[in-house]
Amino acid sequence: MDKLFIEGGSVLKGSVTVSGSKNALLPVLAAALLTPEKCVIKNAPALSDTNTMIRIIKNLGVQVEVEGSVIKIKSGNFKKFAAPYRLVSTMRASFCVLGPLLARLKKAEVSLPGGCVIGVRPVDLHIKGLKALGASIEIKDGYVCAKAKRLCGKDIFLGGAFGSSVLATGNIMMAATLAKGTTVIENAACEPEVVSLADFLNKMGANIKGQGSPTIEIKGVKSLGGAEYENIPDRIEASTLAIASAITKGEVTIKNVIVKHLSALIEKLEEAGVTVKRGKNFIIVKRNGSVKPVDVTALPYPGFPTDAQAQFMSLMSIASGISVITEKIYPDRFMHVPELNRMGADIYREGPYAIVHGVKQLNGAPVMASDLRASAALVLAGLVAKGKTEVLRVYHLDRGYENLDIKLTQLGAKIYRTKQ
Image (cartoon, rainbow, N blue to C red; front, side, top):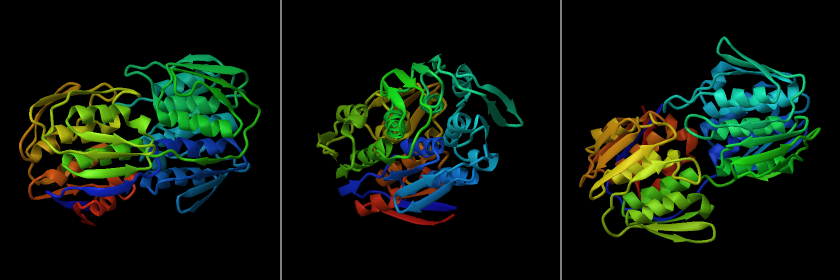
């Protein structure tokens, strides 16, 4: 298990290239199970979560080849339909194999998922949607066991307690591609990752319309074929790097981005006094003056992303005033608050709200990463803290960021990785 040492005080300058999206890649890999033909996915990030999904797919008896950032999958006529606990328990996104397995093999057994500890994340919407398509489902010994002689299209409302669900939308969409008739998903997630998955499925021969809107229509087809697809850039990595530039009073050019995916973050950075220059596929993030306090609410896309909430809180911890951060997606996603307070931040949590009193200086301290985005927030805090910060359990970081410590070092940060 690795840990990071960070010497604070460096000003980040230069340019950096964003890797492919983790959250877009994982369901696309699962979608390749829907066809016996070869699928080629480009711009795949080298992450532990990527490796976990590949292991799950290989465990089903599917052929997978990895050549740098290119992943080739040919499922052929595989017969295994169970995704085991030892793999699924480590990563929530692996649950998205449920829909493809059910559509392709008419049965599936997938362990209830694990992943980061950021609060309750039920799978009820997945089950609701697949039942509506005609599947019989029971939860037995920690597994979701699903069967269906034939999936049939249906109008499905995917509303949940905290709004739409990206993974549930993807799971239902994948299953519906091979269902008889037309499926209409209402209150579908609008995230770019859902659009990416739909675009890949359409390249495979699916008939999907409305992706990126709350209403998605899927007309079932008899079979899907192979396809070649380029994964979209990771908007959360881009957001993290943008905040890193802002928090260190730096000037960083962030390349390989889809600028419209960052609109909510850019707006809040500009409110905080940060200059953001937009290009065709890049942004330049620069801060000269002090950080202004900004209120932020994490919402489904196109709102401010919950996956950037922790990182933005690190920036607000040194703002010249009080800001309120509200979490509407995962109300318990504040595991980073006590760790930031250990570094001298002044943050008080009240339910889904975090009241952040900006301080003049953070101080280096040993801190513990509890989840993927919290670990990034602690790294960003360490960049601006006085003295040395020791971030433990950075395996969380490696789940979702490709060489983040190396990229930050190339921009001028002083970060050292060692064994814990």
